[in-house]
Image (cartoon, rainbow, N blue to C red; front, side, top):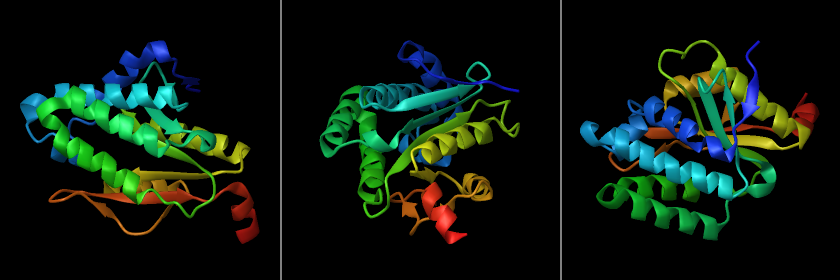
Length: 205
């Protein structure tokens, strides 16, 4: 049985390595960084900022099977503030230079579309499996670990699926579409997803 472990801050490089590789061919990141010759390094800079900012803001990360799959998320009590978002944008502009424009658009769009009228919730930001280990259920294990943490706090779970394939997977795990798709200007769409908190699921049943 694969063991799920919390990622320490001194393991940031290992976490960023997974995201750099796993998101290289992702439709969203292909739009954010359209030059394939520069995308790997841009992904690395982007995710270094994201991971460092998440840890600094009280977020957590999990990994399974020696970083074969990883997930990054904010527990219900520490969702990013407006000030933290502004600081994140500043760091992206600084680290990405001439490649920052679409990354900033992307992050601002996610922030603007984050639901404000839902119960307290865990926010799952990035979940990835390394190439070669996909389709083996490792991402599902990490999703279920997030669900367990949320249920322990009677919180919902929110996130965005970056493609229809991931959306279908998350729906099979019990999450549902929440509102309209989030469409990048001239680019692909993301699909907001929601899992109700345990008390709401009990009431509904």
